[in-house]
Amino acid sequence: MDESVKVSEESAVTIPLKNLISILTATAVAVIGYYQISNRISFLENQVAINLIEIEENENWIDNFEPPPEVKDSVERVRELESRIIILETLFQREHGK
Image 1 (tube, rainbow, N blue to C red):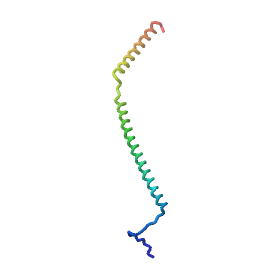
Image 2: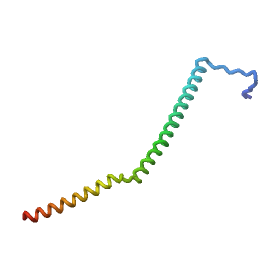
Image 3: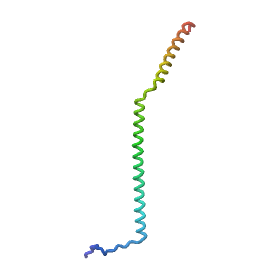
Image 4: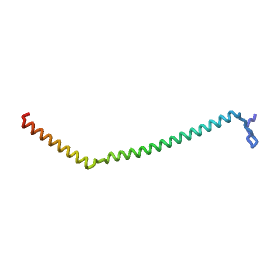
């Protein structure tokens, strides 16, 4: 029993049209799905790269932040005023015996 399959230019394959359409439809859906997933992954990778750059810029800004001279001057003046108030309160308490 030699049941070998012989393939030649004249060989024919028959498949029902319904099955052929189903195979073509499934292939088209798979290709479109793959393209959409691949596109979405590329988009998300790009967004991650952009976010990492922005995060690094923010970290650098935070690490290198120095308040403007006007703010430093205001803080020093407020501290000076606080110390003068403490001195005045102490003098007031001494004079009024409290």
